[in-house]
Image (cartoon, rainbow, N blue to C red):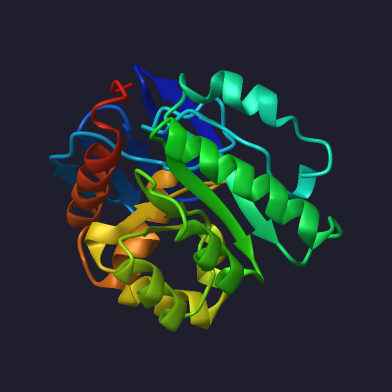
Length: 241
């Protein structure tokens, strides 16, 4: 796939398909396929990518600081505290019981960061792998501005438990690999849902399109919902890109 950058917009093409995407402006999509042209404008205020490792993204995202559970043995809580007041959220933080870091170390570091999030009134972005019960138990002990499960790949039942507590679930490309995760996505209300690219190189609008199709809604409806969710949490702390 090839890319062109034109006035804050992206034109990318592969074979006979050409698409035009503007993540900053109202979403403008232009298709060319099999000698036919399709043109659509979706009146959106912003495209939210709630979690990305792409430093050059033009989507609306958030600034975070935190010690990932993979690095819990080497992280410095003092450094997190020094930056906590200047970011939008504390993350990624959480528990990963599939990695080699001792559980007790992960739990101690996670607990300390949850306390900072409560102290500084910050949202948290959670990494949770094979530790859903422990994460839910720990998070419930704190009064947090918002809780976002990043890269959610849990079950429909776990999704509903999180949503019942007022938490948000973020879905990305990994979601499409598992029928269980797809079922969780379909059961998640739009008012509790975010979309992310994480480490994927797939354009964020493609991820939106796939999620919208799985949910049976338009891209416009999905993007409007994620924008409203974003504003509900971050409108007092985050300036639009």
